[in-house]
Length: 235
Image 1: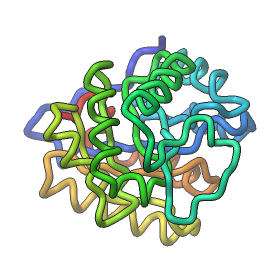
Image 2: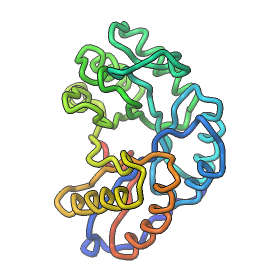
Image 3: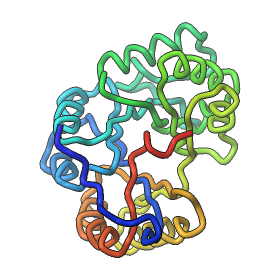
Image 4: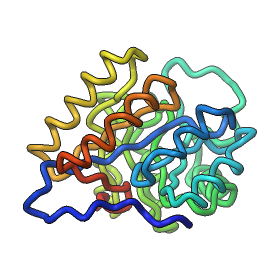
């Protein structure tokens, strides 16, 4: 793997710590997907399993030194059957069914260190399903990031209660794909980093997101902001 691009900043010079996750890799291997892999490799790449290019992107990202996680499909309130059904975690699944789906996802993407939820507004509200996810991840020694797609999510607290290393997302960078909105959200994340140990932001494989991160990450680093991978912040 390529070495991590860690800045040589003294602890008392760090203005804030940021963790950036980029979701939705795996369904393509076009120029935009490859462009994200030219960014600093202290952001974390989250890949949807079972897609046409999931394994290829995972191999490439790992080669370039990126931390990889699985963007695990989970049931949303507006869920419709689609090509994610092989892996999707839904209400009513038994512990063994949940465990099998997670194990198969990690077999497909063996370098992944943990998961975050893809959609999941309904799934993450279900305590029994989250217990089954937690028990499975604990056995595999994998972490969980709650993408927090529902204000009623039970994922974070359930992981905590079951000894799974976890954290929760604070900001979605690009829920509106417009430069002004993305910059505003990035500014919010930076502001949060002044009052939190680490501020966690999630973006997606979108053109405007790439352009802004390409420009802003070097500026932020030069100004004393420290970027961390997910495995460095979960507890």
